[in-house]
Image 1 (cartoon, rainbow, N blue to C red):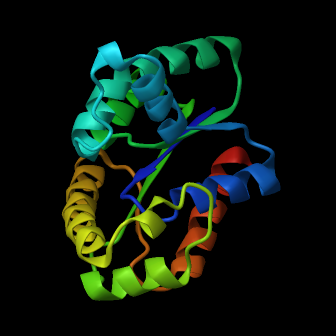
Image 2 (cartoon, helix red, strand yellow; image 1 turned 180 degrees about the vertical axis):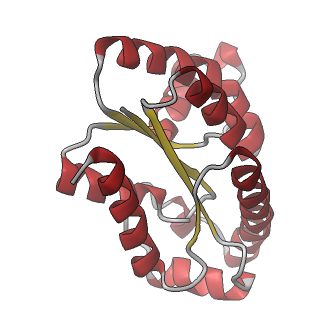
Length: 187
């Protein structure tokens, strides 16, 4: 079974995957690691890590799709977390309907200033790049990620994929996602 955890920046994807790793021993790859490895290790590929989630996800998907094919062939359970689009997961799920599980996280229903406060208050996790960004710049990113969250919510509805909004009750929503994955894994 392959699990795809996609969503907006600072929606809790990394926290969720680390929890799945601890509770379910599911190995995973953060697509941020793949992305930055390609950016730094193969600059000739011209992958712009700041191009926006849709563009980065489209650039990375051929690699992720082929990695997925190998994992499915070898029957290895695995989690991919990061910049993933519902349409791509849905395409893979059409070919492997019982072997693909996905969900997406976002925050459509929060004020940008509140999200900024939460990011500043609850920082300190791995990949905590917002700590290096000024508030005004981070607010610009938050506005972009709220728009991306709305896009994800609509696309998840279109492709019948679970979308979880972490605008409010962040920890409770993550508990719901872990329960969802547990129901798919069977325990």
